[in-house]
Image (cartoon, rainbow, N blue to C red; front, side, top):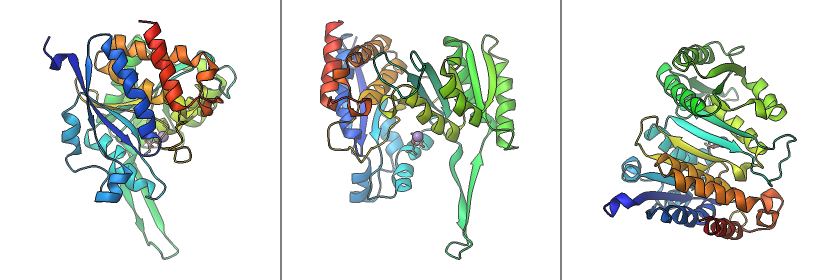
Length: 357
Ligand code: IPM
Ligand code: MN
């Protein structure tokens, strides 16, 4: 095997707030997991984010998509800082990347790890995945502000749902459900919205015909919000539009102990393309710089990254080590009710990996 075959070319965008802290805690864990298989990580650190925006007027360069394309995968920390309007940075970085790279789906697994406290009863053993459509819906940026400043200001935000995009997300979700429990819940709101969501229902039903081993139900998003807390074990794969998937992902994270535990993968649906892997939590400016952020969401995002690159063993090593570390409350960070620092939890994960080799 040549040198380059035994390397993962990883682009890293630490970004803003706690992003750099959780990314720094994650890289050594991914390196250690891959080292077992004799694979090295070739890191490219990209300084994209709020600081770059303040310095150069743009959060990322215009050839960002090309730069990303020169790597195998991207690990992304977080974007957002209090002195720059949120939408500027978000559109200038993560939403921009999702759209420019056409990252069709956002995979958001939610797993309750033994020993991690949650605020929800009966969340023990929860293990579900939200497949969120990642390029359309309310996130296309279509609309405008009319009569601005007249006192009759009119905000127009147009949601867009296309057959092609629904289909590709649906195929991804059904294939995933087929590899898991064979159960899929489509989340829409077709009782109140008469165009986009009925199209979702129709197209996803058509796609379901290709997956006879997967049973599908259609659940209204409001009912899903209640069910997620009341009967989370009745759920396995959820397929949702961009906005519904966004909202439900935060709710679902609570089942696993909160935002510090929620990983995600922004991926295309064609094999071999570059994905962006990011913790769902965001930049958390209130705790940034204190060294107390929970790095688990980022580490688990790293596990998704390794898995998608075919390094299944390394991915399992990361997850097993995280799980083993979390059993002991002395390794829990403040969000989990503990006193461990980011670095302490990271060291604990590394030690567990060492022990299980
Ligand atoms: C997420 C975030 C983003 C989203 C924001 C930062 C635009 O909340 O990844 O869930 O809404 O997609
Ligand atoms: Mn979100």
